[in-house]
Image: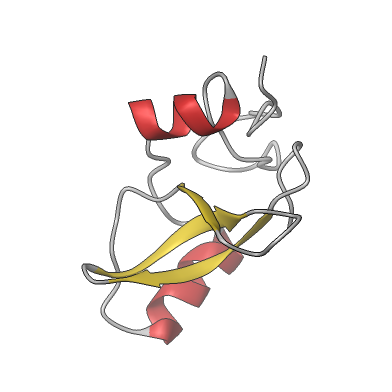
Length: 90
């Protein structure tokens, strides 16, 4: 799955735990954390990503990395709503 800006959305790791975020399309470095939650196992994090069962994190970091609000490409049937401007930069 990719954001509008072309960055891959996947499970990433930090000192705080596993989370859902984007990686830079050019060099693969972490770009922004999308999920508010941290996960204790890869299985839980991957399940959350696959089912889109996580809270989208809205913070200055995401606004900085995208130039605007960072919301996921989420199908209409999602609990989060129909957002199509994830990492759009608009």
